[in-house]
Length: 153
Ligand code: HEC
Ligand code: HEC
Image (cartoon, rainbow, N blue to C red; front, side):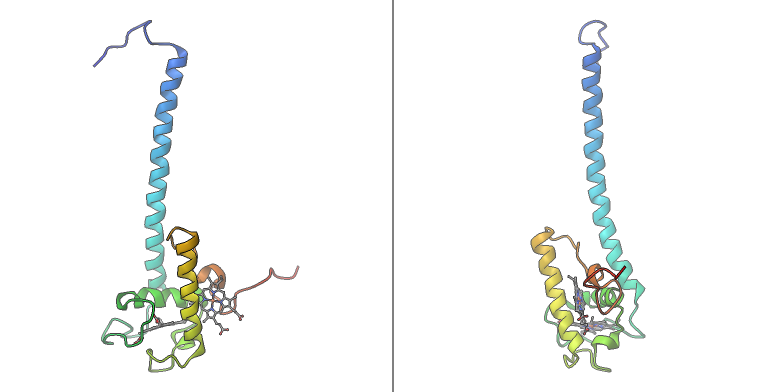
């Protein structure tokens, strides 16, 4: 411990510099915490979306066996991704899936949804450093048809 040395080293300018240093360290910490918080928030938002739309009784992952026709997502992502699809586009499971056959690609919406997912993943990878900034909801806002132009005044 160095005791304060009156006279030597102390000047209003020095005190100011010290305050400035403390403030900038706190600012940096705050910035870091904000980043961590935002990341945590993004993760929570995704799982919340998934919970918003629980698949009807015995949905994917529960007593359904392994998926047969996944081209983009992984088995363990089915539940959260389908939840985000439903919340993002306002479509029900049956809006994209043939009744009773989730693996079938015979519904146009499912084929389009795959392209949409590829678009979303590539824009996040290429433009947003891998952060999930763009989601189905960004454009669709819970609606099958995203607005292309602002509403007429
Ligand atoms: C916006 C369209 C869309 C909606 C809505 C949707 N799905 Fe999907 N689903 C897909 C697409 C696309 C795939 C294929 C993903 C891939 O190829 O990686 C898929 C795959 C699946 C699979 C895997 C099937 C297999 O065997 O390969 C299951 C199970 C599934 N969805 C269940 C559901 C359930 C349950 C719901 C409602 C909660 C739902 N989906 C809502 C588009 C949708
Ligand atoms: C960059 C904006 C944008 C994003 C992000 C986006 N979409 Fe779309 N989507 C559109 C537009 C525009 C259309 C065409 C709508 C129309 O024809 O009215 C469309 C159409 C669709 C359709 C076909 C609807 C129909 O009329 O048959 C499906 C299904 C769909 N999107 C699913 C998704 C899913 C699932 C995601 C997330 C993975 C997604 N979209 C993300 C803009 C977007």
